[in-house]
Image (cartoon, rainbow, N blue to C red; front, side, top):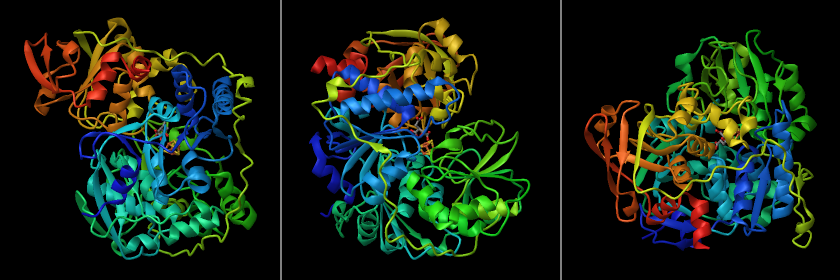
Length: 639
Ligand code: MIC
Ligand code: SF4
């Protein structure tokens, strides 16, 4: 039987477990990346694991999230990460170099390699044929130390692309169509593999738009084959030596299959407040808008911004609209500056931001009250923009630019041929090399006063009796659990301080209540923890005394982060039991000492006198981690 591309890469990296769908496997990780908002924690954890030097083929530390330095905190994090990278053997992508996923695609990513990154959009590299995963900082720390990365052997979804996109329609519309088809939980436990004749109509940066937003499907990863277009891209980045051809076998068997005829797609928008709330832009046409933000790791490539420049050339942004443009990398910005496209964008009235995440993570540019904001980004969760009442729509660069000029939603219908450059402008001067192994001892780690130790859990007790500190509904995002934005992100290295903001978007009193209770449970609905890989969504609840999270279902990365930090992730066997528990009910779990053999636990509701079956759907290794009180305790025990 033929193999999918995903299976081929997994099999060539398998170091633990049997490749049977649904069971846990450990794979060798060739490369890692971190960004600054999760990086400090990852390097603190790496330090705590006591490993002197990274053991991967390549590890890169990027600075791209916390670049709005309103106090010393973010700059201190940068200094810490810079010194850790130097000492431990990582490349350091300095602020100004660009957004991690864009720079990785341009300068580092290779077909067939495995990559994990402490950022949920790491699968962007699937656009070039890497098998890449978003992960918590601890998993990245372990992989940097040469340890395996553990995932559930995924199911593979084959999406066959046929035809060619119509004028005004672009890669963003393809992934919005996939989101419409599969929803924000449709990718859980799956890798989305693209194939078919339509693939060759898409360049690597266009493919990367699609793999980037596989994160919004909850997918484990997304991947394209590596073909002549991949070779062209690598050659134009002067990296032809990194090319290998990679395809699924023609008789590969997929667990689910879909076909999308690219020629039938129209411009789409993800409406507030979920990336799968899809409507055709034509249905929104004429609706007044207040803000347009172009950029992010989804849509800030040379191709995207050249298209935007072509649309804006000679026009003026509507008076009621504030337009921001953040180029994805120094490479993109330099090329736009050199060929005059940047001047066209500026002349039209765009506000140029640095090459960083910026407004995507609420680092400035929050919309006005009730503002309608069109963004080329990947997430439109309520409040993520920094304005709770804002209505954020996710659109393509074409729709964004057309609408910015019109002052209202407008359907792009013109084709702009943007030739791929024969050679990109290559200048890696903002990628700093590490110290040699011989010199590493002389490098001092710089630790500013905001960098506090992270909390460590204790071994799991035999029983837990505690109150439900918070009950929440379906699709709770990590932005609900641990909000980001310009005010809170500077506290990423200070868990006691950031914990004061945990869940405050949902319930401002949560941190106070949790601390007063000393220990507690959280109860939630479907797809709990969707969105980012931020470990802080587990570390802050841990610090506040949360012992177990009982939900209808979890998003993959967050569930792993809970396990890694020794918090029990439990799922109702009968979803209807969710309704029977009220906030502040007292719950009790017994028999935790016998965790290795138990799949299903009995959760007692002491207040109501009821019991519910809850499953602990984690691998035997996951159970050992939980018993030890987290991954770091587990590793130090097994060492
Ligand atoms: C995001 O897009 O939500 C982030 C900010 O990039 C996160 C990482 C973080 O919270 O630092 C992600 O996607 O994992
Ligand atoms: Fe940065 Fe936004 Fe991409 Fe996250 S989704 S890495 S915040 S640009």
